[in-house]
Amino acid sequence: MMNLSQVIVSGCVAAVFGIIVECLRKKVWISKTQGWTILLITIALWNVGAYFFNKSSTESEIITSIESAIKKVPHFGVIEEYEPQTYTHLKNKMIAIAKQHFSEQEMIDAIQPEMLKIHRKRMQSATNSWVVEVMRLNIEQIEKIQRINPDKCFKFLFPEVKGGINPLKYLSQDLLKRRVEKDIEMMRSSYSTNRHVITEKEKDKAKENIQLVARFLHVKYGDDLKILDQPIKGLGKENIACQLVKTMWEKVISFPEEEAAGLTRLILSTE
Image (cartoon, rainbow, N blue to C red; front, top):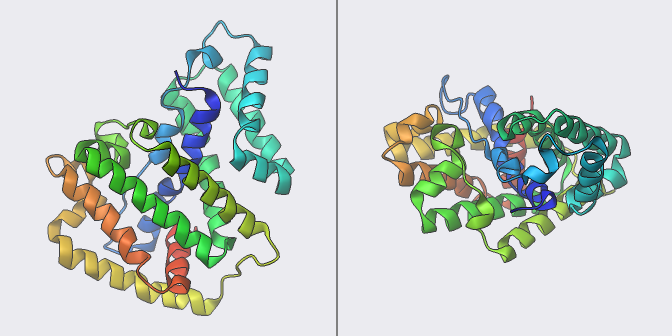
């Protein structure tokens, strides 16, 4: 049984993928219908132990369990250090959700927006090198699972089609440790005196580059690009779907670091 702190770490590790969903749709960077769903945050509470959330748990047990768990998660430590009000809000929301004895999916749906909002915001101000490094590790995650089983990779990327997976079963402790460490460095850089400030020049260049990525994917994948808009079309083409997402991010980070970071910020922005 996975303990709650492991579950929260898992969610933080996966969160950055989820922020791609609405952002790419709004950018209309492939076509007018390219709204695609990569809700990896669903793994956040996939194997939550019943101990914390079953109906027999008392209110004090739930509060103690939540507080103890988030204290062990580095992401929350950074948030508490720099944004204590946000930290308190997240803690109280998790306690409130646990008290309602939601199903795992209901808990996921309730927590997901908060985690995605934090990752999106921090990536906008993080320094170029850490933005690119986080995305590089995202690619490594996909690659590892794809190598083990393309079907598992498809579920990892598109859980709404065939159900998700618990990545802790497929990713090494070393990779997870590195990912958490990179996430923390990325977040800290976004709060530092050297934090990044987006310029109009960066935005304009990113808009040019996003069109290059779109054309590149269209030439390489043709009609299979529709999988991003309609993941169900990936059934029977699980390996292609997985490769498509991986290829997109590989193309993004192939640009010079400054441009790669700018393009990533554009994709993940809320504008």
